[in-house]
Amino acid sequence: MNNELQVGTPTFGFDESARESTPQVSKLAVASLILSIVVCCPFTTIAGLVTGLLALRATSKDRALTGRWLAIVAIVVSLLATLGQFVMASQAYNNIFVPIFSGPQSALLAGARGDVSGFQSGFIATAANGNTPETAEAFLAAVKERYGEFESASLDTTTAPQQPPAAGQDLVAEYQLDFAKGRMRATCATEIATQSGAFSMRLRSLVIHDAALGDLRYPPAPTSETP
Image 1 (spheres, rainbow, N blue to C red):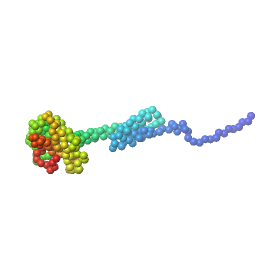
Image 2: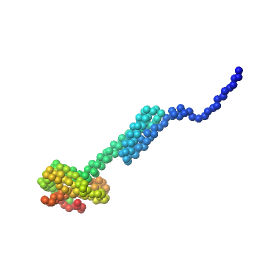
Image 3: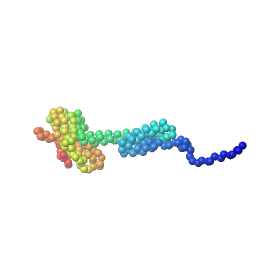
Image 4: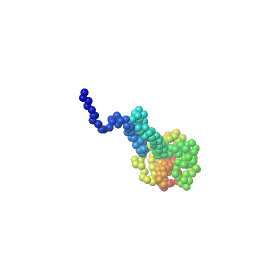
């Protein structure tokens, strides 16, 4: 009986099964974290939220994928960033766009409610420039007597400035004022920013044009810039 010793040929290399079982970081989790920290654009934070949720789902289903905590961090950061962007956009809309498109509406509504100080606070003029309770009451009384209760104001887009004012200049625009007795045309000069650079969005002057009875202006005293 021929007994031969069989010697196997040794093999070298990696075990494919071992390589496949090695945990891999989820690319979605990494992408979601990167997108979530780009807070300058709301679209990237929303994309970070979506990819973070997808990564969280993928890592839950596939135990070979890691990066679950990356996805959770990305989701939290995306939510906070998106919320912050929403708050900032809301403030910009209320503090900048609404005053531009409604002009003297806030001040005139305050005056219509009998809030004289509220009407005055809508203007940057001081008492030395004619912004006093007496002149405010006289103006509001004349407006109500002529046109009835004030209802609303809107920017006249047909005559709206095509370009924003230069630094240090007022926004001068035409507005349509709706009253109980009809509609009147008005010109407003609005201070965009103070000399220190802070947003102001307060009225410098308001002129209600009335060809029949004469224009009504507030404050009555002339200012350095007129509409």
